[in-house]
Length: 121
Length: 284
Image (cartoon, rainbow over all chains, first blue to last red; front, side, top):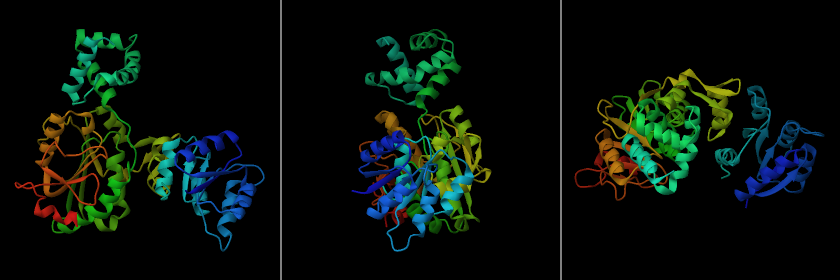
């Protein structure tokens, strides 16, 4: 079973994402911000990270940059999932090392399609 | 809905579009036609059926057929057919058509354009291979309204996220407010034409590839056979037909056989019922 770390400061979004991911047979872990997500990755690296952008303490972009600069780890697939839906944010995310990008709101079909694009489903 | 009204709508839809509505699908009539009834200033579905029965208003009938036959589409739907197209069918055609450098592809139920544009995007991504070729991609659909949307190439945020890789999205789409517009470069690769699959294909010419996915599933066996047999007449002997994941030719026509290893892809057969020699290159 593949594992997915859902990083979002919204409890509702985490709950919705968890439900969809569990339907897609992912073991789901949650983090409330980028710092929490880094701690989770240090403990156990997930196969994929579903990552919000705007969060307190550490935002998604800073988390991604730090993750991608960490040497000697098995780099997970990172899929942004954010309300930032303009082209400039998408390009910044891809340059920082995101593999896919989901613009909120999302549904099961979008997550499934995007995960299929990166070979997860 | 009473049985007389149901029978009227069932017969109308079958005659006009081939769509089969069984009694257990009455909910589809209600969910799709009630909004149309309200838009037309009517109380509900019963009034809509009464108006069709008494007036035989062609404009209204066209809208009914549109509402019942327009189905959701998305880019690279099911992924596998497009992988087969990119990795097997197109390379085989590139070799076999090297002398004339001309390809013709038909998407027979193009809906809002995502399928023909997905094929165009595959080819554009490897444009070095195709730049001196004449590529014709034809998208047909029974609904004029949905073809207008296809021609515009404007998609919602939801539509561009279903199946389209983000790298392709930022490369070929421009953000227009809440919508995403496909580049003129890709749109110009696809031509659209209104076509009812129950009617003649005369004038379409011969194709190297036909996509006819997720439409025959709504037809009865006679109409499935009729469409597939007439498509055969418009398919090159080494061409291929793509059907939807839940569709098959088995028990419907012997004019095609499945291409081994490529699920949903069918090659035309010869008079003996074997895959035509010219198409064997597809089977590896």
